Length: 373
Image (cartoon, rainbow, N blue to C red; front, top):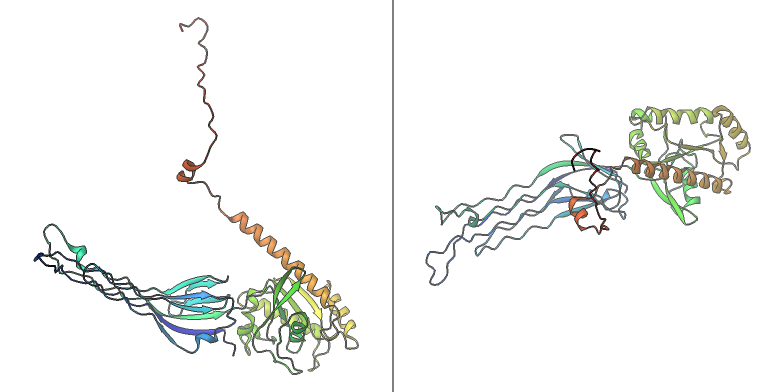
């Protein structure tokens, strides 16, 4: 079961209370305070795990509560801190506060994490309240309450390239031919109801490609599962747009292409500006090359002809997409480097740096002629 949206209640554990205790030793009848601090409550942490592929693992439990910290003890013994709860989600998970609507964290890279409900701090024991005028304090602090709130998790599939097009355009077959992914393939529309990921190997490198569910007209307004489908496109660097040459419903393939572009353009986050490789699929069908020529003339740019059945044109498409992704990554790295602030050495670093000593000579300018030296 593929789950890409879930809401959970999370609560950090309460801190343990501090102890109000006094030394009780033989021959020390008036021992001072020795109450230890309470332990901190556990926090609820969300971490991006590359081994997770969707949010189904979070659906078995609606409420996640970390344990409370233990209370402090005598002899200045602190209570034990409670363990944190770590929830594992796929990279690409966006976490929001349900009530406020604000974004808590966008977990993009594997290992990214965020505390969604911080545990309460343990209370201080009475040993901290001893003063010169109050040598036997009975005050102590209760532990702080842990944070609690409802959070929503929304998965947006991260892939370098995304396959888009109308249902039954051949996207799943394409993915199965260029990767080891095994998506469901059938001759009826909407076989793919959730994204499928595969890794394309090109030489010593590779990229991730996603087979996204087929779009329909009105998807940008939420028709069908339009919003659910389109938000997965947001994470794709390059789009591979497959156009079926002879749709089963008799529609015009050129109009179908423009219909998909319209949905990408009208989505809440415009997606039509993404680099795109256009392919007419099912080249094994008679007349598919003529459809390709008409579409290329309509667009005024190259349209590739491919067949996921015979393999025609697949290597050419993969090579083209791989180069586009490499160029985009290089541009992103250059832009990140350009925006990175200059780092100056700290005073401590300067003091510990081994500099070469240079002699400094003070030269007194000659006195003016006639002046007394």
